[in-house]
Image (cartoon, rainbow, N blue to C red; front, side, top):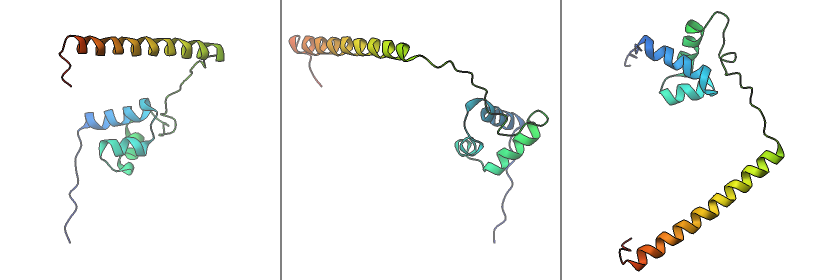
Amino acid sequence: MGSVQRRNYPEAFKREAVERVGSSGLTVGKVASELGIHEAILRRWVRQLSPAGATPATLQPRVHAITPSMADLAAENHRLRRENERLKMEREILKKTVTIFGTGAR
């Protein structure tokens, strides 16, 4: 039976991982998966490197987002639809231009 080698991670890596847990809004498990480390290791780092009394749950960012009103959302939707139509028209003009000048190699 082979022995398991213990990996040593640099202190900066540990601190960045703990910071990511606190700032990303992702779960400890998701951050650990992204970093390729076991979730238990990251949880231990969070306990060790976080301010006193902090847990992974308390490290989640406090988001005080202002919810846009329905009128704001409708206006934004209308603006985006207009912009989308303008971009479609520009794309069609460019396609025709390429065809006219004969450089239409696709």
